[in-house]
Image 1 (spheres, rainbow, N blue to C red):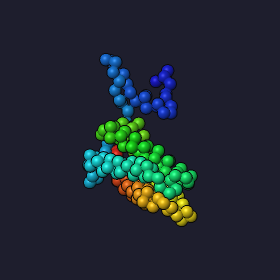
Image 2 (spheres, rainbow, N blue to C red):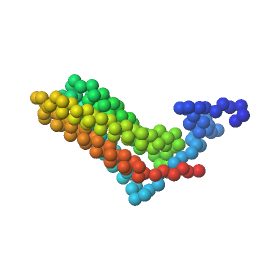
Image 3 (cartoon, helix red, strand yellow):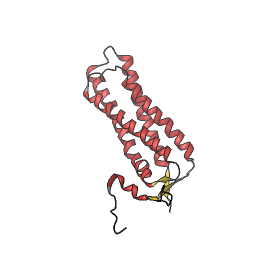
Image 4 (cartoon, one colour):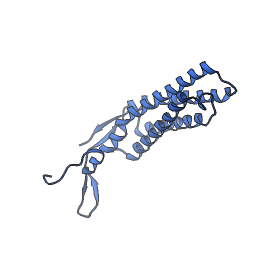
Length: 180
């Protein structure tokens, strides 16, 4: 290793792959095993996927409604748009976590499990900001002629908020331990 440079940054995990005599690459880096604490990995992933799908459906369905505030108010539109992006990020995280298998390779563990708290908190706070912005807009301007659409939007954002709370709680209950 004296003559080789160590990779740094995003692609540093490539150092964990070693070439065999047949020319194939195999992973020789650290792994993390799922530790079952009353909830199997399959059940945990199934519940997390249901919540993730509910989160995605809520943010998309709410955005499809011409609700008061969502059509013309920046402090409703911006948090909703950012929450859409954050939910897409959670869907990507769940896909990578599921495809990673058990045990998880270290670079997958870092990109999924260690990032889950940040991404969950981001969706949580953006859903809360969207609800707060819509409430402020309604207090100042009222429903107008779009009461049904606005109520559905509020329902969808509330569902996003609740699903995110549950998703975060379940993710915190899951534990992985490093293998050697």
